[in-house]
Image 1 (tube, rainbow, N blue to C red):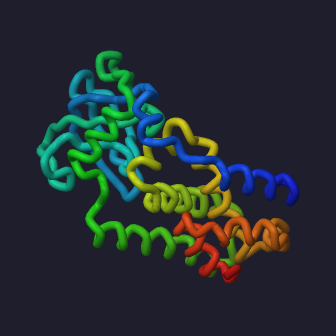
Image 2: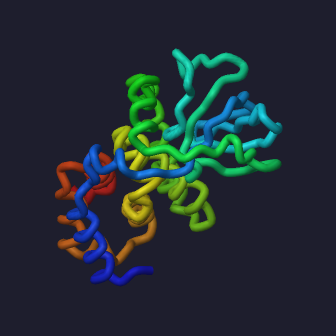
Image 3: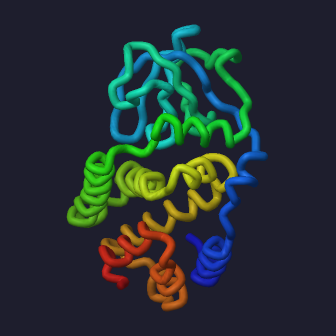
Length: 229
């Protein structure tokens, strides 16, 4: 548990940390999974793929992978995907070396724009309502501690990525992992505070820093739901 002073310092530092410009992002290189795959199963957070090259099974986050097909929501049986390796979890087998490519983030962002990675508005609204509902149900059950990781942290992570722009998503899974974890931490603590009082939210400075950030729509919504604003 961070001290109140420590949490305030982290809040202030990360709120003031400037986003990398798109020009700066173009200079960054990272590893990507680029392979032909077929869908094994899927849920709201990830899709499980079978890699055609060798049959390896991987889970890939839905919010950051790109389906390189005209209609990503109705893909053919086998199709190409591109995803940062930080968004890939190996389930079975071995990711073939030939499927791991190193690209500038500019390449990834250009493909996101081309293949329209943002979900349709009705889909986005449905997902937002679902994730907030999961958090609400956890609070109504009295905030079972055993479900913090599976319910609170998981849904907060989904909300953070859902509210991020395509450029931010690229940053949050590569160059700004600390910022991603910070946002999930804030969302989680604000939710837990509704069932189990957290000392951080007795500090007006912390509440003002988080709830006064007009650039972060997720934090603003969480502040209203939590009764902090």
